[in-house]
Amino acid sequence: MGRRNKEEKVFVSFHYLSKGDGSPFTIVEFENLCEKIKNSPRVDIRKEENVALMRSGILVPLSDYQKLNDLMVFGAFHATYSGHSYENNEKGKISSRSLNIRKFHYLLYLSKNGRIYIGAQYLGTFGGYGDVRLAIQKLLPSGLAVNSTAIRSLNYAARNVSPKEVKLTIERPTEVKAGKRALHERMVLSLQRAGKGSPFEDVVRDDIISLFKLALPDRKKALFERLKNAGLAEFDEDELANCNIVVDVDGRQQTMYLFDNGVHATKFDADVVLTSEGHPEPEQLKQVMRELLSSEIINAGKG
Image (cartoon, rainbow, N blue to C red):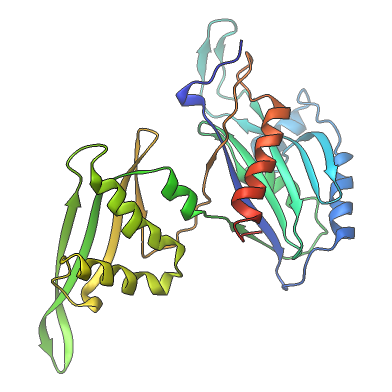
């Protein structure tokens, strides 16, 4: 019987690879990459040389290749974990030198503008983009400069959070020397909800979190105008130094930084059920990853 524990939630992140010189990946280059993935040899984990390469992160095995169409493939990558011993009720003590291998899935897509998008699966804190990126990049032509970009969907994040507190950092000059500001007075204005489900949450979503859709340089001015209209702006616009929103996400507390785009990719919740082996069913996960790629990346103007 399938199960889905909170600690074993399945997430998917998306990144894209682009050429360092700005030219697009062509359909021929993508086909060559897919052919290499398809023909990736099966890795014998009994051989010590393979174990050493996998432990060092040089070798990331790929398997279960599926061509979905000319622009998209689905498959599995195998991430390794080692470095600490533990006890298992069936096998006894597991050595810190042993190599634990976990299977995850990826989705590969060539966009119209010549980017290679990679969707990577997480299972709780395990899995993710780093391993599959390494495997894919090693199959690209030697010497090709490639950039990797994380995709953040702040609109998605805003739909899935419960705001708790807004922290506004205000900085004012307190001393002027030789015509220059020498010292600053810094204070933090904290706006907090009275309780979960209070109107505060909707106000913050509608009036502050919604500003994430704006370009970074435009957010401060828009926030200042909304604070002024609400009678909360007892300071000048240039004195507004920062705005952080503390939120609950699935019972975990996180902070959203309005004046910082950040570098971490959004983790999209993949609503799938785990099998008795503790892994998502591949066909269901494949469908969910395709839907996320379409709705959150392509149709959202990020792909």
